[in-house]
Length: 379
Ligand SMILES: NC(=O)c1ccc[n+]([C@@H]2O[C@H](COP(=O)([O-])OP(=O)(O)OC[C@H]3O[C@@H](n4cnc5c(N)ncnc54)[C@H](O)[C@@H]3O)[C@@H](O)[C@H]2O)c1
Image (cartoon, rainbow, N blue to C red; front, side):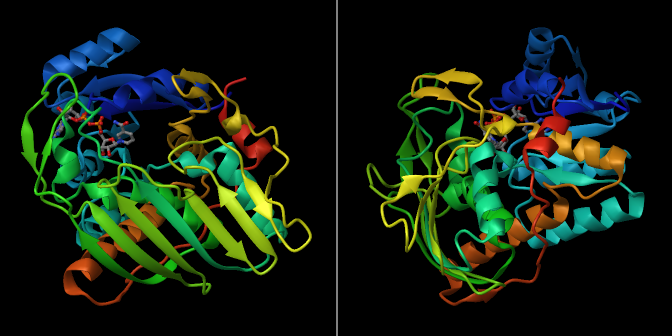
């Protein structure tokens, strides 16, 4: 089966269970240890998943660990990823990679100097739905994409997350928290962004937690919670992106892309599966595209809303395979850094009330078809 890389996790909160549960689906990676600023959190996860709990320093010095996954809160991403690289290990971070372009460039320099790799979530664009859209766009079904709309709007995170504070601090907010899913998929589908403009606001200066543990506690809002952005892509497409946690109900689709030969409708890029629809000059009635048997579109989890496909850690597995095979990482530092540039420039545009030209660019990742996805999975 070839080389397997040992993986350690720093940050044993909410999302760590998803990584620990799903990692065994994939070749090339083996979860071995975990650490957290709160040792009790690391101990709990270690016991649940049969791995070793360590301190952060011990994990960084562990010779059985090749890649460290950074699942801490956004505010800690830069410092922890820097420590991972300084310890001589490859790093894979949850989104957002960092909170400023400067931090991202510093990580890139450090990784390059040390000959190490950095990867970053989201990896949901590797899902069956988004890769079907990618195949159709690459095949020319939609023609040249000229415009589109993205909407990610709800009424916030304080009703489900046990510690929702970070969502409402600088580094949180809907654009840095949920924008990465949309921007990563837009990069996957149409490439890099050239310039952005935005209007930003917040509906209320505080939020009241309604999730169980801290129910009734009032927390401050320190970052915009409604953002209406315009993105101009290097290839010419102009896309609107509306991200808000101030909306109780709406009737917009998640993602609609309009091309010279038709329109394609995508499901929420926060998830791997769902229907992809198409309508065009000869198919005016919008209909789902014929589903394909993509491994990352097959429902593998039960949820109150129904069965769904969840293959988070696919990006980490692709990074491990890319390191072994010496090829490009789909969820690469270059693309995550461009995503950060897009997001912080959107927020800056809102503050400065002007369009902002991006400083970075990137390539589209290689498509992940059925064969490539199967190659990442254990049989
Ligand atoms: N929860 C989700 O559903 C979800 C989904 C996708 C992505 N994410 C991303 O994953 C990351 C973590 O989210 P979460 O919901 O698991 O957060 P969380 O608050 O539940 O967990 C974060 C953990 O990191 C630990 N931590 C914080 N700073 C640390 C430091 N400096 N050193 C060591 N440990 C530290 C905390 O003690 C905590 O246990 C965020 O970037 C978030 O955007 C979360």
